[in-house]
Image (tube, rainbow, N blue to C red; front, side, top):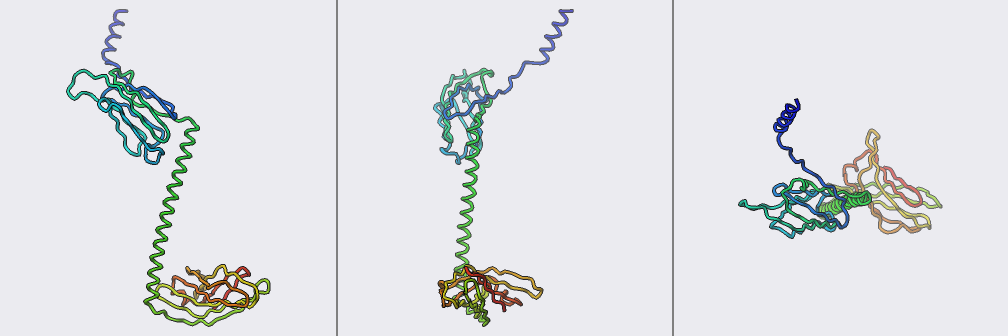
Length: 298
């Protein structure tokens, strides 16, 4: 009975075949200066796995130096977080040379010195070397990545602002050409209103006329200060109302010539982008000052 059991066990082992070696991984804590020894089986290779992408955004950038290019090779794809190391073999058979070399990897303030050796023993070969970061270093890396993303967004934002400024400049030149070549239609308004404001300030708002161009309209108006106190104009805009009473605020920009001193008047302009707004049923010119608000409707 014992002999039969022994024969059955040997037969089962033969059917199972030889045991295959599973790929092994080595975890290494990444420090400012990291040193390790790697034994590499030819044609298998070892992959270095970093906890961050090895791209141009790291400072200092990635630098790799291989002291034995005959015995070892490496490959890296930009933007990835891995480096593949392989041991070279003879092209025409023969015994395997005993290669040794050093691989130096520098990236983002980390410096790695890897002693490379060839081996035929699978038990000494690591398919992957995974570099881990301690919590403080990982938190610093995350903060650096967040700041880098913010810097990228800020750069894109500034580029878009510059593009908008350039577009606005081209539009302004086009409008200047239109003003120079086109004779505007004049529509007279001749409407005025006197409004008392704070601190015994009396202002008179007088809308004189419109200059209507194909792509814009300019309202010329005057503001008269009937008091000895200086008034600061802070804003001016136009309100329109259709037949159904719905109000609208056309896109506009105002300009006044100088400050409004006491017992004086200034001429101002209000430019709107939509000339059709001039034909609205009701128009209201609004003037905002440091003394209060003045409105004139017609």
